[in-house]
Picture 1 (cartoon, rainbow, N blue to C red):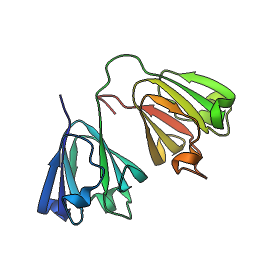
Picture 2 (picture 1 turned 90 degrees about the horizontal axis):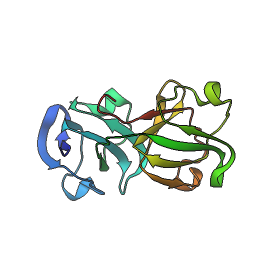
Picture 3 (picture 1 turned 120 degrees about the vertical axis):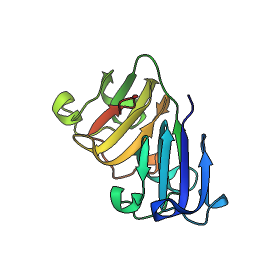
Length: 176
């Protein structure tokens, strides 16, 4: 089943709307602004800059009548990415340093504190082999987020995440 999200120009689902079931790199092509949204099915990452850049926020099925105050966003949603449903195993390797350097740990489940579980003070690169994951800047799945889909990520700094440390990681599942 595909995901479906509807964006509205004003709070409380008012004003013009735009509906999508896929990635959208620039919402201002359809709406002049976006202040509320409704996720009817699936999971999405929304971004406060075009082309899937800037701060990222995970949205699952539900109504977000004033997401800026609900989620602490300072900017309107400018782009979104539909997260495909994953059935099967989850597997990723995290590395202490860029370019897969330093300590390496393989993960298959959620980790609420990288530092406590692995004694790693930082995570600067990873390789996602299976599944879709959310990385958080604070322990216990708090703070800014970054969506990771299967692939190699050699440098979080080069991805625009300089100065950000990732301290917890969660699998994106039906129950997320």
